[in-house]
Amino acid sequence: MDKMRSLIFFMVMISSATLEIKDNLTATEGGSITLPDPVVELGFLSYGRTNIAYLKNREIDILEENFRNRLLWNSSTGLLTLTDLQKNDSGIYDIDSKRGNVFLFSYKLSVYVMSSSATLEIKDNLTATEGGSITLPDPVMELGFLLYGRKNIAYFRIRKIDIFEENFRNRLLWNNSTGLLTLTDLQKNDSGIYHIDSKKGNVFLFSYKLSVYECVQQPTVKASAVSADSCTLVCLVEKGDETTLLWYRGEERVNQISSDLSLSLTLHKQDFNSTFKCVAANPAEEKFISVNATVSCGQDNTEEKGFDHGHVGLILISALIILTIASLITWMFVMKKCRGRTQRKTHNRMNFTEVDYV
Image (tube, one colour):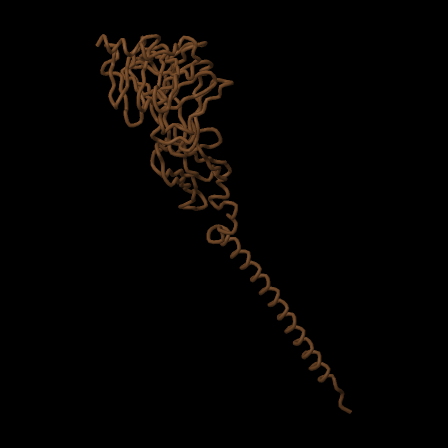
């Protein structure tokens, strides 16, 4: 082993003291990190100025006990992965590739200890609808993490966001001017507990409960059991994910909330001049339809519909009176005419009897 160490130190001729950092890498305690550049044939990995591994012929010799069982080399891809990260794994790592693709690159690894979220109180309950978006209310201005449950899904640093979970790619946005995080194109399975762990500047750890609901359907209203004195309005919605229905007269709620897909409201004659509103709502949004009772219950056509009730009697009586008057006038006319004929006949008869005989 001593000969091996001597050989290794002899081969590492290039000092990394003046190397520029190619990339700043970040990870969380207990997680893992894969160095981005592969050693395919022969090379070394050093931590600071200590060689910790020698890579050759598809085999890895780990020289530091602290890295045994944690440092993995995929000899097919050439990539090195360090697992079960600890806070003291932070530091400068150098990859020195000696054959094939020859290079010497340095990386700065920062391992962060995530604050425990198991006992955190929920700061805010957030609601949204499918296909919509939600913005978490507290900003990460410099450096921090976003977790979903206990899974680290994003890292924010130097005006850049690294997203670790494929499901959140192209949907999780960070406004590095305001520091606010927005999740777009929401799905129901996005519901859950989110944690923002801000590490610099305004340092905090806040938790939020997000509930994503189906969109509320637009309610419709139909009238039934319509009469001159009453009417029933039925409010309907096609489907509902925790959707409730309720009726309002103006701003006053006039019945109990219903979680069924329909809700009836019976109106009486004194209600016909009022305006009502049926509201369909879930915890994330609401939609409503306004109802004019006079129109919906057909009371603007009461006169036409009333022909079968009180108005028809009035019309019949009026017609009977008119018919009676017309009959009387006709009778009087006939009687007058008959009287005139009688008088003429009498006059002629009188003229006849007055003839003198000589």
